[in-house]
Image 1 (cartoon, rainbow, N blue to C red):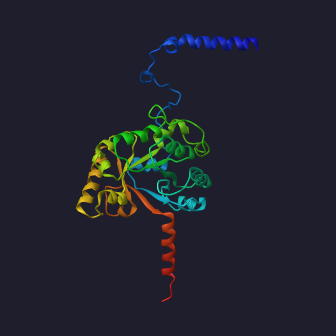
Image 2 (tube, rainbow, N blue to C red):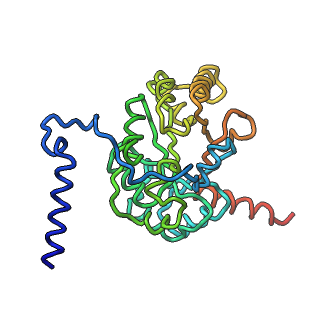
Image 3 (cartoon, one colour):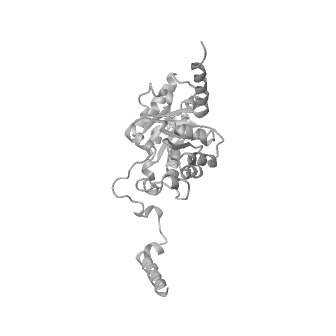
Length: 292
């Protein structure tokens, strides 16, 4: 025991002597600190998130929307054929415990778990990541500063300030190539929504922010904030501006699924919400089986 204690003291002393400047320098600057190699990966980091794979390949990425907080409904959507499912946390009353429960119910479903949060705060984004989300949708981005806030709280250091606290993600992604922490930054999908006129004004600067994968044209709120409707020249000019900014900066462009057939510049889509699909399916079944 005495030998072990002496060895430990010697190691501590040696460590302190190895970095005397760091330990004693009153002018230590975080910006000048060189990030260590603990999370480095040999060779290229593998992309295991299937949603990210599609983004990188330029293939269509289609998400379904879940507004219910019922795990069975979420799992029905997650197994229906969508590439990802976004749980609606901006407009609905779903809480984080309910979202985590939905993800947990069928964490091995084909659709990647995603969420639309309400704001660009550490709390919102950290809760989403710790629950297991791998697609993050953030609404009403008005400026590059807001977009950088999203990146800051989403990505692990040294890119961002994502804390490595616990969460059920550790169960979901324990076997991914290179490990979750080491490969997260290369696998997360971040989509920012452009819907206000401030966002349209600043869209070129927003599109330049590294760490954003796609810009989404928020079709409904774009009309809400502009006062014009889809098809109006003023509305379409705004859409063209967003598309041009995204493409100039290597970002994908997202929109409603109904645009998939006619707008070839769009490769990322939001499908209908769960309960509206239930209603549409019921109506279609009744129509198909009606007596002549």
